Length: 261
Image 1 (cartoon, rainbow, N blue to C red):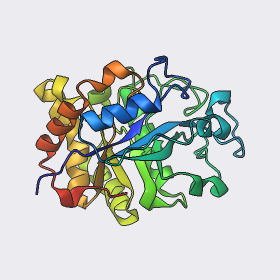
Image 2: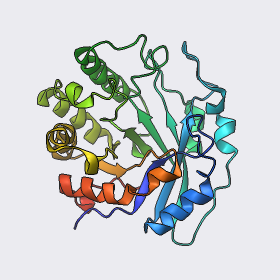
Image 3: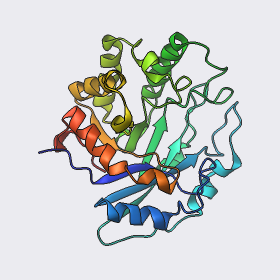
């Protein structure tokens, strides 16, 4: 059976410091879910738990108390609204959520690809695609070494534009199939979710092929996938469902490939 686009597990509201749309409220997000026929939605505002020490500096609005300020989340009889977060990993590979707070969240997305944040997630500005590819792999490897509740963890936007100046295809094509198989085999064994959200509907065929390759390998390894728009504004929600359907078609995903929360 074809993978059903019935959820969005990565979405931000005004609590995230990088969300500048005052209309991106939990109530608006719930309406978006209802309009698109989703049965689950997860709010994943940015977190750096103040209980976790880091050499990097993090925005005060990423504190745990800021995220919980939106609770309780609005609910609907047809949509389950989950409380999650997006947690960064700093340049020392420290993940910004304490063990005691892991249980506070229904789902946690962790991006290894926020590689534009020099001084936070990477030590210094990345200068070349080759350097970016090396860091992409290293951060992925280090995340998989962590002791985390992998059944409710998702690895966010592995092919996003933050990897190297929007030149993501140049970077991804430098990473070998062998390396990708090793990484995604590790993901499959842990049961961690792989996020799908790249804008395939607006990609040219060459770039689309390059950026789909990691996900095809992940599928081959038996990984489970979830859909996450990573939306920070209401206007970005307009074509989300269309894009989800295009990704599903491009990867020929079935319900058996779905991460279930």
